[in-house]
Length: 69
Length: 259
Image (cartoon, rainbow over all chains, first blue to last red; front, side):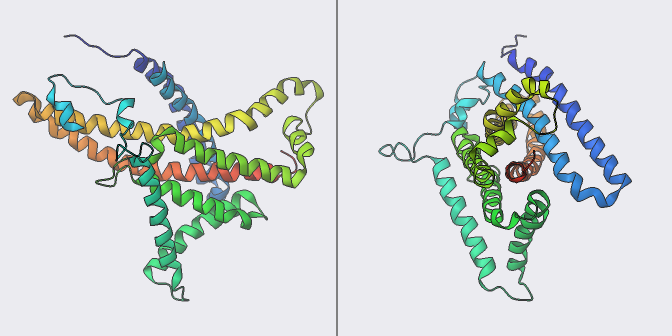
């Protein structure tokens, strides 16, 4: 069997590990915070999503590069 | 598109070329599907909110309740919490941004339309540019041009030698990285999501034309595709939320006297 394709995609898979772990850690911290102090939810939510967006941006750079290169 | 695909014997995976749609009329080269979708989204959003606010009453109708729910979510959940006391003059901007992005993202999974406008990079960057202009002009207006640049480049309360490192980073963040990632995030999410659905549905359709063994597995591709459609729905809402939230955060950053 012959496989053809771009090896960039494998590179993207590896590159996505970091942002995936980061996203997990961000939401771990967010859930922990809300579990300990439920009234802090409104304060923590934008911060959590901001962090998520930052981590996700890195994964998306990888996606774009996988297509561009 | 699908018929062309299956005419050949090999499976051609969907790629970036699937996002380049031909003009609807050959004589008008700029009139493509994304342009029409943007116009449609403006009409839909306007009509919905005009209808929902026209007969505003103390006891709201279902439509009014839905419209006010969205408005309240942006005003209280986002603008008020993030921007602070001056939030009210940014509510129209944020509200428009959120509903516009949300409806355009939804087009990706609406039957017959099925194309996310923001998977064309130009649209996403046009929106990012608007936010860019807004948050910089707000900052300049509030603190003066010199004060605003100074506030960005020389954050107070930092030991002097650190400025060597911090100033280039801060300037790059405010003027290059922020607008770049803001547009890219929306574009790449919509692009990747649409591509994902294309892979599953075109792949399933291709499997259906194979030998009997492949025909049996093809429903699983379709089922996974339907599941991913719901996942995409979640991503679309999330991206509209994040785009608006980040715009609000950038505005709040420009309004604050000390960063």
